[in-house]
Length: 359
Image 1 (cartoon, rainbow, N blue to C red):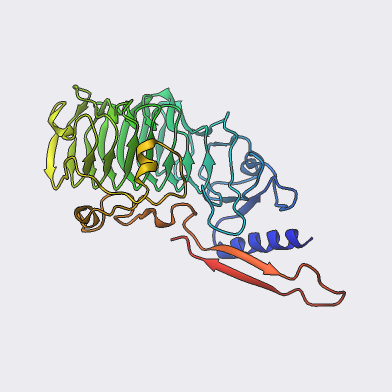
Image 2: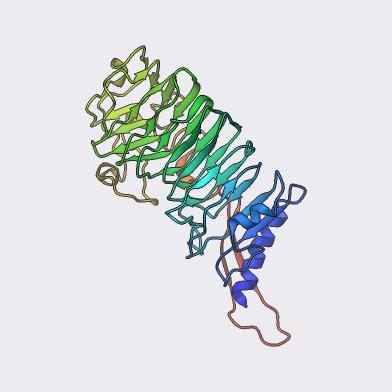
């Protein structure tokens, strides 16, 4: 009973925080933590455009879900830093689908090892947010997709293929790809962005980590790459990267530490630290390709600490979307609840609540 009381209080806290906004629905497939729904897709079927669905962390996998209208899906984070450490995990054999009508949707704090698939033919999907998730790749299914005004921020990418593969898109424009960890050990990190068709794509403050087996990027163009760390990977040295501008990045341990010299029309925008050791705190984890969702990836190199174009650190912890709180969704959360395990008849149930902010 105590667990049920705590769970209901947590969900009530979240509901209160959303008063005056669209309807909030809750999902949990853990019998000890009951909610309104046990399945994410069933909660979606009962929702309306603009609603929010909170997904409770669980030791059980959730099934896949598909978005076909504007919804916000929020889980507890890809590595929750709180008393209840369970993630909201989608079964690895399944992917999450974003399809026609889903413009304006946001997925935050989820654990999606099967990846996120963008589906449809001649479909426009705009204002999509993927924030603070573990994602086994972002890829397309279909063709002539028009993908505009996307924010991809604070995610840990760990795919079985390319991290982001836009092979089915005809337009990719006004994208912000900010402060993500790209673990590039099974394919390219960024691949098959349409040319022509790609414009105003900012790749900023990311960490690209590989094992020297795959190209970092392939078939990309018109990127602005700033304040990133390119570590232990290969840059494609042919004609498949074009019209990209690099500034204030760190390259280290690559087969080509000056990637702007290859391809067509690429530019050294200045401020790049070539073949410079960033001295990441957990650098052995990065270099070996080990998955560590709780690793410390801050740079210690003096030049890197203030070498970004905005005066902050190059890499994950700089800019306006620091990796510091990436493990948790970006809103206040209950870190811990404690209370007496027993209450006498007619007694008072006293609890102590420790809340933190995820911003």
